[in-house]
Amino acid sequence: MPEPREAAVSARPDLRRVACIGGGVIGGGWVARFLLAGIDVAVHDPHPEAERIVREVLANARTAYARLTQAPLPAPGTLTFHATIEAAVEGADWIQESVPERLDLKRGVLAAIDAACPAHALIGSSTSGLLPSDLQAGLSRPERFFVAHPYNPVYLLPLVEIVPGARTDPQTVADAVGLLAPTGMKGVPIAKEIDAFVGDRLLEALWREALWLIRDDICDVETLDDVIRYSFGLRWAQMGLFQTYRIAGGEAGMRHFLGQFGPALKWPWTKLTDVVDLDEALVEKIAAQSDAQNAGLSLRRLEQIRDENLVGILQALKGADDGRGWGAGKLLAAFEGDLWRKAQAASPDADAPVPACLSARVEPSWVDYNGHMTEHRYLQVFGDTTDVLLRRIGVDVAYVEAGASYYTVETHLRHLGEARLAEHLACRTQILSFDDKRLHLFHVLTRAGVDEPIATAEQMLLHVDRASRRAAAAPEAILSRLAGLVERQSATTMPEGAGRAISPAKRRSDRSPIHEQVSDRRH
Image (cartoon, rainbow, N blue to C red):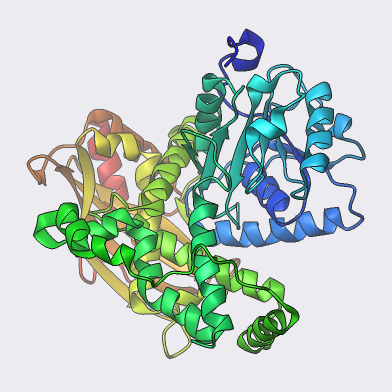
C-alpha cells in the first residue's frame, strides 16, 4: 500500500459538494441522501430520462423523511444536472459513481472522474460485486478510491459497505466513514476485499436456495416471502444473525448453540454449491407468480409501501432499549440528536419565534378503525411540541445527557374534532406559568392554516435531577429563557379550556398567571 499523499487524505470536516455519476435507482438514492443532508449535488447521467428518474426518487425520499423524523432537517442542498463528467465533478468533495455493473464501463468512467476531480476528493463506487483493486487499476490517485456499496433505498437504509482496494489509503476509509455519519449513514469498513463483499454474499446464498425451492415446486414466491417476513426477517432487523442465534443457545449462549446445531451443517440440506438453471420455463414460472403476487401494485406504489414500512420499523427500533434504540433505530436516534444540536446552534433560543409550534402529518399508522387519528397519537404530537419548547429554552440532548430534564407529571386532553389520514396539523404552545421547578403549558392542535382546534392538552412538567429522580430547581439560564419567551408570546390570558384539571399555583382575577410569573421573575 503506498505512502499517503497529503492532498488525498487531508482533514475533511464535512461535505459541501458531491457529484453523483449515474442517476438510476441507486444513483438517485445517493442524490436524495446527500441532498436532504444539506449537501449540494451535481449529477451526470447520459440517459435521456435521468432527470425525471432522479426527481421521482427524490420525491419519494422527501415523503419518507417527513414521516421519519420531527428533527429539523438542514436546508436541502442545490441539485444540478450536467452534460459531462468534467462539469459535474468540478469542486466536488466526494464523487459517487453508480453506473451499470460492467468492468470496462466503470473503469472508463472512473478514469474520467479521476482526471477531472479535485485532488482532495474521495471517489466511491456503488458496485455490488466488482473488486475495488480491479476498479482502481490505472487511476492516477488510487489511494483515494474505494467501494461504497449501499442498499436500496439508499435514502432510508443507512448501511454502506466501505471496501478498500489494494492501493486504497487507510485514512481514506476512515474519512469516508466519518463524512457519511452526518448524513445518517453507517459506513462499515470491510477488512479485506472479496467478491460480492459481505451483504451480497449473504443475499446470494439465500437467493440461490430460494430459486431451487421455486424450481422444485416446494413453494411459490408468495409462500417463500411469507416465510421470511413473518419469521426471521423480523428478528434480523433488530439483532442480525449471530445475536439472534446467541439467544437461541439459551443461557449457555453461542457455544451451546454451535455445539447443538453445528453438526446439522453437514447434513445434505443445502444446494448452495449447485447453480439453478434459469431456463425459460423457470423464468416464466417466477415472473408469473411475481405478477400475481403484485397484481394492482405499480412500481412507485410498491416503493411507497416499502418506505412507509421501513419508516415504521426504524421508529420502532429507535424507541427500543429504554429510549436508546436498537439496530438501525439507534443510528436514527443519534442522527436526530445531531440534527437537534445543529439546529440549536444555528438558531439561538432568543431569536426563535413564539409560540413554539410543531407541524405534523397524519400517517397511515396513526389512524384507527374509525378512520381518524387514534388517541395515543394526540399525546405523541403534544409531547413532541413540548420537546420543541424545551429545546428552545436549552433543555436539549446535551442538557439531558448532563443529568437533568423536565418530566411530564400531569396531562389533560380534550378532543374537540377529528384528525384524519394525510391531514397536515399544526400544534402551538402557550406558557401558562412557571417557577424554579414547575412548567405549566397549554397546547392547541389545529389543521394547518385553520384556527378551529381539533384538540387541546394542558400539561404540568417538573424539572428533575435524573440521577436522584427527584424534583430539582432549574438553573438560572433556563428560567431566564422561559421568562423571555413569556414576555414575547402574544397570548396573555388563560385560554379557553385551561385550568379544568390542573389548577395554576397562583390566580387573581385582574392578572393572568403569565403576568404574575413575569412580575415574580423580575423581582
